[in-house]
Amino acid sequence: MIKKHITILLMLITAAVISSCTTLKQQQQQREDIVIDIVHIEQAQDNLAELVEMIVPLEALGGTEARRRQDELSQARRMISELEKKPSADINYSGELMAWSGRLAILEGRYSEAQRLYRQSQAASPQNIPSVILGIRLEGDPEKRLELVNNELVKTGNQASGFGELQIERGRSLAELNRFAEAAGAFDTAFTSGIVSIYQKSYETGRNRAWELRNSTDAAAGTMGLLVQEGVSWKDCISIVNNETQLLRFISGGRDITDAEFFNRLLDRAFIPYTQNINENEWPAAKPRADEIVTRSGAAWFAWHLYAESRANRGLLSRYSARYTTMTNPRSPIADVPLLSPFFDSILGCVETELMSLPDGRNFNPAPPIHGAELLAIFRRIAN
Image (cartoon, helix red, strand yellow):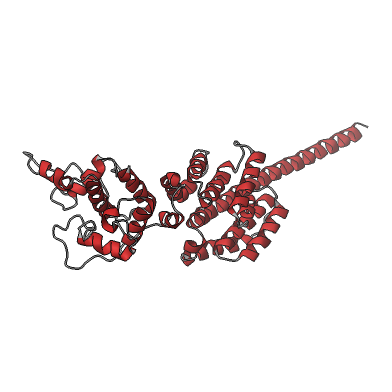
């Protein structure tokens, strides 16, 4: 009887040990599965973050400019193709991946493919933000896009995931509708929402352009197209000042003359410089062309000559050089503008009268092109 009890006891102990070992193995397997799942999730998030870094800058450029960057488009497409070959049990990840593929398809000009991917993404994960934005971007009418964005913002609230991305879309739509002050506000809201930094890097230019244009909504229809260009020519510059002010009446006498004639008369009267290089002390022999892009130095020259003409005071054209060159230790107050440059008076005059500014507080940055919106603001200040 004792042996029987011992045998039963040993059997129970063995069963308990086996059960315990099995439980431990199951717990260990569960822990390993959890670790694997975490690794997969982290890898999936890393993959999507890399796609964001690749696609968002192209979206900010717009389809036409993005299609000029075929190497970058191809790189993004190759990455998506590789990720699509790896099956995932995470339907939200799959939905987002399809949405980014659709957004890339828009940039590639493949709208039917983008619509197909939008439907698939919505079926997999209806509320994922990349898919919501893909649906918004597939709408061609900016008024309807703005309505879609506003509806999504009402649903999600300002604390929800995707708030910043939706504000970017709101800013883009408002800018297309020439509601520039609101567009700049939407971009600023997006930038302070905790959105990843690539969005601010990509859309900072668009935000600044909207801010420049915020007071231009009353511009003539022919002017508005010039204001949104990356650079404007002398011909464009003349069109802006002639469309929006009376500053050129001294040239035209109130008669209707062509932009080409305006250009030649302004050139003959030294309102347009032969060079825009502030380090050249002598004018070159070749005349500038009407289609030459206006830089900040050229704009300062033109604006200051208009300012002096509008005040009937030609002495303004040499006011600053006459003062600074007679000082005991003469030097330019603007770091990148030489005292003996022909542009010294024009640039210093524009800065002192707040027609133009020093971007960093020290330098004028004479070489970059000037935007049409900034020119319009300058001309309006002179006219007023």
